[in-house]
Image 1 (cartoon, rainbow, N blue to C red):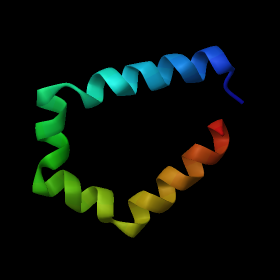
Image 2: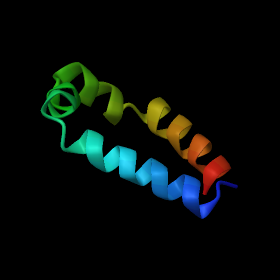
Image 3: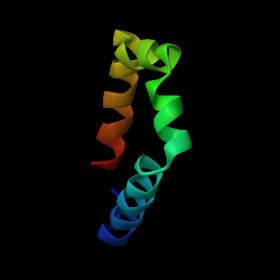
Length: 53
C-alpha cells in the first residue's frame, strides 16, 4: 500500500498534468477517449487500482 506522502505526490503530479494544455489535448483525442471507454481497459485499471488503494 502506498504511503500518504507518495499518494500526495502522485495527486500533485496529476493535478499539474491536468492543467497542462498539451495533456488536455491528448486526453480529448477521439482515440484516447475510445481506449478510456473500452471495458477491458477499465477492468485493467480497476485491478491496478486495487494494488494501490
